[in-house]
Length: 509
Image (tube, rainbow, N blue to C red):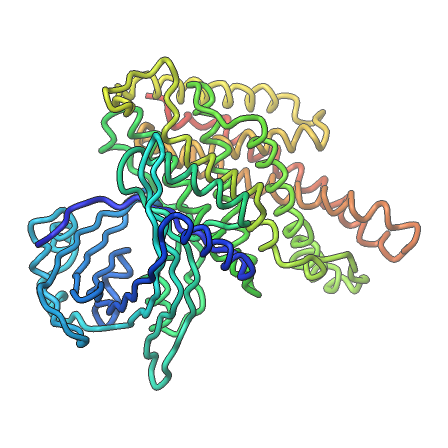
């Protein structure tokens, strides 16, 4: 006996002092009894399934054992899931049968990804022991299941037996509109200070079995729009790409890691990419409200504080030491609290849910079917909009190139933002560009942005140091060097911008 379905859910973590209140909420909705779930996760010795974001498990649910195969999709909240009741009881874990999934979409993907020889090496890798309390909640747009999980994940790593605690709430769609899940998530964020986590138990077990505390930071993955027939699907793929990078990195920041710098950096990159995408969306009537846009700016500026001192500590001070000059002692990022207080903040978590809700935005100009789903229209109008925005941005760069010598620092910063818009756009829409021109144009933009980024770092450092020279005259040496360096780098910016303008734009035929 099997069940075929796609799983749409959001997982929330929460402060420990909110556990009792959340438990009482679920009990009040009918979740009086707890269910004991013991699961064994299966993978190859080198964790091939986990590396492909897949999970295979057998789990004891009451008196029966259920085998489940899960496959992640491009949507961080959506997974393909196939459950099969094994028809055996008892306390001992039964033998799994990978062939039970062959006829399902998840099984077909598994067999397409791996050879039979690779799948023959499957073995038990880690286990979970969970006590679950759940309830069903209905409203006018959908039925959702709340599942409060308390327990452990355990795995053997070499000679050590590793254990990690579980305390999480899953909100899963059982019927109706996915928006129901997101609306409930917003309510829990406000009421219980909950925060989104995209690390599944399978992903955590994978790390535990390998002796790792955290996965590597999530970078932006290449986007393929070739298979996206219409504009609606293309927009979804772009949104998923931004969300994957943002949600993964903020999930790690939420755990307060000591070494957070690269997770923070990749989170900021993801937010910048999202900002570019929102500009395209807004031209088609898909936009965040004013409160969310304001929250976006607050969060981005707060995260930016953690990188302001990077140029001084990593670049400038080593140069000053080589010149036998005094180092600069500024209030550094070490004096700032762990950035988890920003990523866990209610306003940021609500912003994330509002971004997820953009997928379900349905402007009056778009057609919807009888179920309310957006009909996947031709991508031609969307491409026309893309090329128009790219063209106007390139025209602005050209207009500033001829008067670059007269530009103030603020004007150069504006140019940098325009070029960032171009570069992220090129990453999004590579499949819409001309292959003959893409490589050279993208390379020129990237080189220019390196120079403009260095110029911005120097300007920020000058602003910070100028106000301190009266109290600390030793900073005058560094200030003089920085002002001379600003002129040198400004000239590099001028030359690299001219090179960008000389290139044929990547989107031109």
